[in-house]
Structures are given as C-alpha cells and as structure tokens.
Figure 1 (spheres, rainbow, N blue to C red):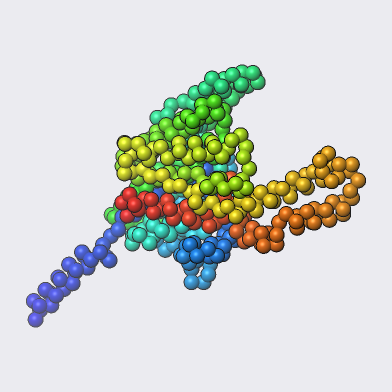
Figure 2 (cartoon, rainbow, N blue to C red; figure 1 turned 90 degrees about the horizontal axis):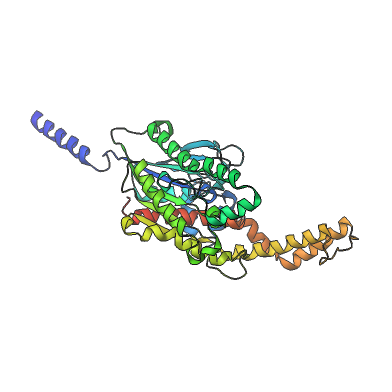
Length: 419
C-alpha cells in the first residue's frame, strides 16, 4: 500500500513538472520606439467611436474590462520613456493599461491617451500565456537623419544644397555645430533606457523570475514625419531618389540595434507612415507636392523589409488604411472656417470685414452663420466623438487609428514567428 502511494505521488509530481500549465515561461520583451505617433495621441475619450464600426468593434471589446473601463493587462508590463523634444524625459511603468500615450504635464504619470502600445500588448497577451514586458521610448519631433542616427551611419554630413543655402544665410557653422551635438542623441537615450530596464527588470515587473529568464522578442519602429518634412536633408532636386538616404539610415539602424542588444536575429517591424491615407481628394492639403513625396517616403521606409539580409526578420506594416477619410474631410472644412475667422480678425481685403467696420457681435454672428453653412451638426458631433488632439499629422488623435496600428504591428511580429 505504501509503495503504491509513493508511486502515485511520483507520477503526480512528474505530471506537474512537465505540464505546460505549470512550466516556467520566459519573459517576452518587446521594444517600441519612434517619435510622436509612437508616443501616441489616441484619446481615451474617443474609445466609444471604435465600437461604431463593425470592423473595429471587436477591438473595443478587447480594450475594455467588465466594468466598461480601459482594461488593465494582467500579464503585460510596460516601461515608457518620453518627454519634451530634445530631453531625456521621465519614465512611467506598471501593468499595461490606457494612459501610456502622450503625457502633457508629467511623463511619469498616466494621462488620457494611448499609442500603439496598448492594442499591441493586448494582442501579444492573447498569443502568449507567459509574462510580457514592453519597453517604449519615443519623443516628438525627432528624425532619423540626426536624432536617432545610429553609430554605424557615422557623422551627419551636409549635402551641397544645405551648404549653399546656409552659407548664404551666414549660418553654416552654427547649424553644423547644432547637428553635431544632436547626432545620435535619441538613439543613445533609447539604448540607455533599454539597458536600464534590462539591468533591473524586477523594478518594472516585480514578479520577474530570473531562472525563467527573458527573451528579446521584437522591435517596432514608428517614426518618419520629421525626415519626410525635412527638404534640406532630403531635397526635392533628388527626384525619385529624394528619400533613398532614409532607407540606408533605417537599414543601418536595424543592424546597430541588433548589434548593441546582442540580438543578431531580433525581429523588426517598420510602421510605415499613414498620413494622407489612400490619397482621397479633399481629405488633406497639399504643400510642396507633399502627397507625391509621401508616396516616395513610404516606399523608402519599406525598403529594409525587401533587403536580402533582412529576409524573414524585418516586416513593413502600412498604416495608411487606418487613417480615416471622414476625419480628413471634416478637418478641411474646419480649416476653411478658421481661415474665414482669420480674414475677419485681420481685416483682409478678400474678407467681409475689409474696412474693419464689423463689431465683435457682428463678427461672432457672421462666423456662427458661416460655420453652420460649412459644417453640419452631424459632422461636428462625429468630430467630437472621434478626434482629440494632434490634427492631421497625428491622425486626429483617434484611438481607433492607434488601436489598429498596434494590433497590426503585433500581428506582423507573430507572422514572423515571434510567439
């Protein structure tokens, strides 16, 4: 009898030692980096709008807890570093929930916005039954040519066009010194923070098990606007090759990140910019052939994913499908209203107050009537429900955009086998 009991006990112990449900799981670590759209302006106030669309309503269900409030992930932690432009900033950390987007006053405290990290983390939690840690570093207004320039790209070198125009302005040496000082600053900030978190994981994720260890499981890059809009580093005179340098810089960035993290096969996702959406007329304003340039820039962003050396380990995700034309249409109408207000206040010759005779009351009445003719009550209500801060460049502060982008980034990594 005693022998039988011992045998049963041994089988019991062996079963639980090998049972997947009780096996120790390594911590999966994902790094997310970029500029303001990686920081995130998706207003929590716009969450309900996600549920209006049958295609995205399932996302909203995943983003909300049983109490109807933003979900707190039980197995996903985050360390998020951001701050004002050109400053290291501050870190917020804890279990992943809504609020790790832009932080308007204190970068260490939750605010009312999300970035791609929220739905990214929720998607990853669904795919893996172990612990997950997201390390996010992002700052607004930063470019790859200077701020995020990685060591392997060498020093920033001005092209002939820059030298010519800056010499004419007498600012060549001043600007050159500024760029030398800024070169690689945010790359170093990013790497320093990643190393800081990896050096003391328990500080961020208290239940971390060193015996189970961790795995660097993927890197997501969502950046680009400040390179796209820099027409001196990337002059239009280069024609179709205008943004070729960005492709080279991004490829080297990937190599350097892998080298510095000692992760030579680290899966890498490039979030390709989505401003201008699918180029629907009437949903944006064209400046300096910006719609054409966006086509060139998107192509340049995706180049590393097509390179033989990165085959199967780098993917480009197009975010243009997540940008909503309806918000673009409304914003263009709002711009028309703002321009009329400017004509009134400045008494412009082509405005109704050119002679300056209108009283404040008359100007207000005129603008109320003009706005009512341009914008319908339905459009104004939709804007209030769907948009928050940031305007065109930041996808109108729509959480719907950020949720879809985060999910797509996660799925791209999963498709590469990062489970």
